[in-house]
Length: 341
Image (tube, rainbow, N blue to C red; front, side, top):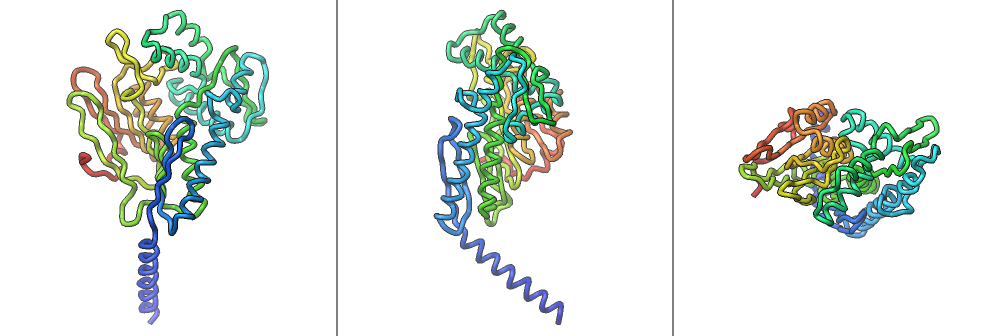
């Protein structure tokens, strides 16, 4: 009798869950934030609940932009940068502290390939892309002198930050945007809507899978190079994905391509023509690893991915005439199908 009751409860519970799943509808909301298109896709019982969750997510991103922006002169990050070289340890908010600390940890792990003090070089290469001209060696050397993660001193006891060198400029760049994507998904989840996907440009945070699917369907583009593998489809749930490369933001000078991703150690835009995709437990981790891997290359960068719990990477690059594909050991565990249709 007890076994029969348990079976009946399971049947009724399962049928009730199925009816609840059928009642969910898909909603998609888009808004420009951080100078980029943000999209929130979610399943909810009704439009009012869906819109309230999406609005709250966008509001959280706007708040984070007021902290992290390197364009806004009044953001907390910009105000901190203006204290460079003044010998002042500046108290920072808990949110900014979290990103500064994460950035410094990754800088240490990557040997400076990832560096949130890279702002002067980023600005230099933005100008190079606009003017379509190579920065002079003297100017690169001048900007490099202002860069270096060891010149950012963090005090964990007091949550203060000090920029030791004059005219340093912090640039959280894509890791700041990636963190905002993570936070936006967290807000939607707090509203009781677990089946959601948040995308900020090419970075995505996936919650629980859509009804009836193994995960959120995400297509990984192919590299524009001879012999490159076809686009691939992966199914993601409760994780983040980030892609880095020079496919869209680059400059070509004297027949050579320079990415918008700058190697902080050399001061030069990355010249490796590649598309790096990383899946990790959260988007900020995935983005930091994809940027580091783009700078380091697969031989030195993949060990960084392998030592990060839950992370997997796929690298398509063109070191010579024909493209090559390199995958980390855990990439095989990412749910996927063959070539995208």
